[in-house]
Structure formats: C-alpha cells, structure tokens
Length: 491
Image (cartoon, rainbow, N blue to C red; front, side, top):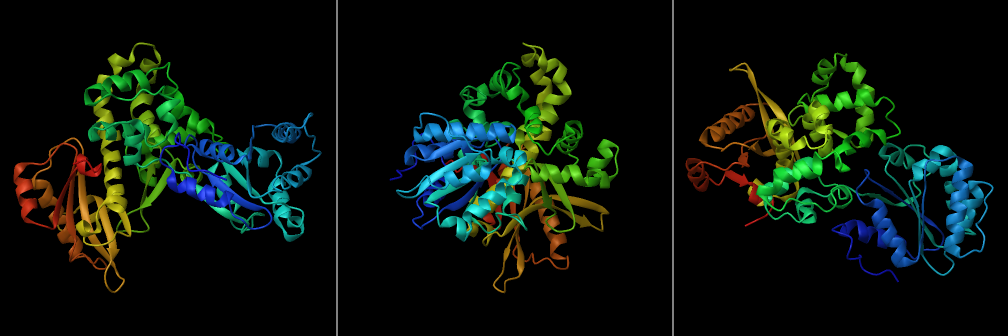
C-alpha cells in the first residue's frame, strides 16, 4: 500500500499524487508513464521515493554502450530480485520481457531513469517497449507501471509525438517544473520578500541549488545577502560557481557550446529579439534559427509572443542562473576565478546585477503573479494570457514598452485587455509612472482590434510608492499598487 508523500519531499503535491495514482491503477497488464523536466528539479528524488514506499524497482542509466547498459540493467534487476548471480540479457527485448513480469501480485512501479542514455545507445528500445505494450505482449505482462524518466526535454517530448513508436501509449505525461517564486522562498527558508526575490533572481526555483550546490547556505536576511552571494555563488570552491557552464555541457543536442553561450550572453545583455541577437553576434538572423530552436527544445530559453503582435516575439532565458552567469560573472570571470577576489569584485558588479538581472526578473515575476496569483476581481476578470509588448505612439513617433498586458474574455467571448502594468525594481514609483501608463492605455483604446474600455492600471515596485500616488490609487479602484510584500502574499 502506497503511503502519503514522504516528509522529505518539499511541495510537489500535484506531482506526487499523479505518480501515486499512476502506480496504483488497478487495470490488468502493463502501463506506461513518461516523466520529464530540466535537470536538478528533483525528478529522480520523487521517483526514488515512489519505489521505496511501494517496493518497486528503479534503474538509473549511464552513458554507455548497449552491451554495457544491458549488463548494468541485469545486475540491478538481479539484485532487486535477490538472485544469487546477476541476470544476463542477450538484448533489450529479452530484458523488457522479463521486466514486464515483475508485478504478479499487483500494480508495481518500475522506473528507468535517464532513459535517453539507453535509447541513444539502443535506438530500437522505444519500439521494443511499444511491442511489449501491444495486445500480444500484454497477454504475458503483469501489472507493471513502467515509468521512463529523462532530462533531455527534446528527446522526452519526441517519445510521444508524431509517429514515434510510443505515441498514444502513455497513461501519464508528467513534467516536473521548477518551483514557483513563492514556493522557492519557502524552500530556501527566506521570510523577507525582498531577499527572497534577489535570491530567486540568481538561482530561480531549482531545488538542487538549495542543498547540494550551496551546502544548505541561505541568506539570514537582507543584511546577509551580499555576503551570501560572495560565499555561495561567486566562490570558486562552491559547485554553483561553474554550474551555468555545465548546464550547456550536459545537453547532448548542443554541439557548439561557444555559439550557444554567445546567444545566451546576448539575451542576458538585453538583446531579446532575433535581429538584436544576430547583431550582437555579427551574424544574420537566419543563422540563429537552429541554435535558438535547440535552446528552446532543451528548456533553457523560451520565446514569448509580443502582447499586441503575435508575429513578433522576444527570447528570455528560462534558467535565472544562466542570466546571472552571462550578465554578471562571465565578464569578470578572470578575477572571480582567483580565490579570495570575489569580495572585492562583487561591489562593482552590483549595478549590472540590478539592471540586467533583477530588473527583468522582477518583471517576469510580476507577470507570473498576474497570471496565477492575483485575484480576478482585482484584474476585472479571469486572465487567459499575460505578456509584455510594445505599443506604437504615431503622434510622438516613438514606441512604449509595456511590461505587462493582462488579457481575458468578455461576456461575448471576445479577447479583452483587462489591465496593463509597469514594473520598476530599484526606483520609487510615482504619479509620473501612472500618467505614462494612462497615456499608453489611451493609445490602446484608439487601436483597432483591442478591447480596452475597462483596462485597469497596475504599478509594481520594489522600491516603494510616493505618498501622492498612494492617495490617487486609494481613490481610484482601477489603479492597483503592488509591492514585494503583496507579490509574496505577506501582510
């Protein structure tokens, strides 16, 4: 009988309940599940806990030849079954056939972790598993709940797509994502919202960075943040120092790391459009189709459509540590590598950190808040999409960047602009910011194809608001001021 989620697993209630449900499906025969997600998110930790509490079997593959992988698998399975000698398999068809007999007494989870390593050495393996799940194969199968897990997102996504052998075979497709910013603050044990956001701007919501990579070192409070950066992030003796470099090296689809690092450096520098990235690298925009596509496939970069122009988009780095590395660490790498220099170097890097790392990250968190956390009554409706965008101002012959545009649906089902917002991390927001936002709203109301009659104005600040602005907002329900405490639901 599978018990409740083990106490050592933080959050992940949805993921755990889905794994438990899959592992306990009572139907006869074997079933297939696929678990994916970027590295360091705790997939293996979750699956290991599942097999431990249920008596299941787990095999973690390594990069090796087919013969060596079969040998390792046979040794692991023999040890699980208590065999006196390791099991020997001639091929994967024999190994999978034996695996499907492991659950004669009832549903049993069987996990193959790092499945892409096996499939690359044995390309026929997905087809072999498909054949084992076909009606003919199911006649001899027991109630094995086979879970294939991997961090190579493009490969794992391809397992169940198009004409792939396992298309339509899976009863579970679980993606283990990074912790959101609120959960990350709780995971790190940080109660001060401002400190939590600064930490999140560096390490994001990747669980492994809390324990393995920083040795459980967390900022004690606002006054300890700079010291924490020096001792835990910019310290050459700590694993986090070189982690950003290893993230690319671990992706098998990335064969020219120098090019990909250059693309990430351009995005971290604020060159978020394809043409801007190309100019930064001295290349043609068409040259970047493949590297940007690969970075998207492996989950390190996301493309976000412009809020008001679906054919325009920007690229953002999905892993905050990569942004921090390319914007802050990489330009000063020579100095930082010398032990003991970080404390002298960090003060001159802080301005870049605030402008190129924290500022854009704050905007991202504000959009996440509006999409997933904000009360629909505050927004004037339920948000269906939230994005940044650019608004043309023909009279002034200029453009205005909108940090946030919140869309919903009106009573007729038409898309409606519920709110627009501006986010400033390191400055006090005042009446001039509100006036600018109101001007942009006016431009949008005169624009064809945009329903903005009920559009509200949202102002976000990490530095606070002027008294004049607070007085105006208190008298106007259509204006909302959101500080860091509100983002983190702190009274």
